[in-house]
Image (cartoon, rainbow, N blue to C red; front, side, top):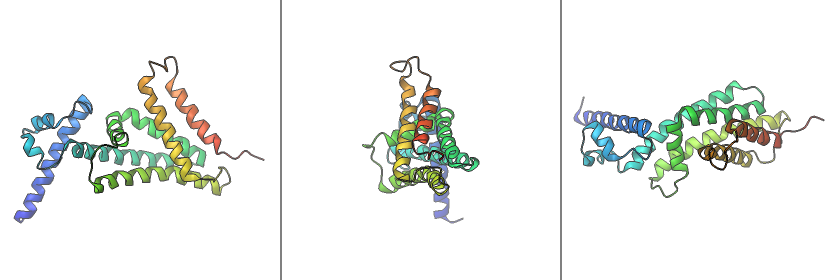
Length: 209
């Protein structure tokens, strides 16, 4: 193995070590409790050494977000593929998304950190990677609607526009769970979520006859 190859392998291994520490902190202390100082302490490196591999905390968190997006895309794809008719696909996608927000809540928080923080500074190539995952996930909804159009089950007016509304709506309802003990006190979040999904699907369903 040449010197350059050895250096690249060492860099890859070190970044994996740093990311492992960041992941452990994220899952134990949450996003706010994950700091470069904390990561450095876990891997027994100086903060300056961390910055040789990552420019800032956002780049470290981005790698964790990409891990989460990969898992989310896989869950959404499996759910959509397992369903039969287009309405079931839309419902399955929505349920997979909510389940991910519960089971993988730390990854979900990190993903939404970038979606809800436009001021976060990332290089264009990293932004494009996030966008690519988002586009692939969005296309699962578009595909289900187009399937419904071809089978004359769903209205095919603007599949992409509806898909954006669909994702915006279900993500918004999930975020409302954070205040379910305040203004939403007494409301069942599961029921509200399912009602929202059903209403969205019914709004583009073609009535028989």
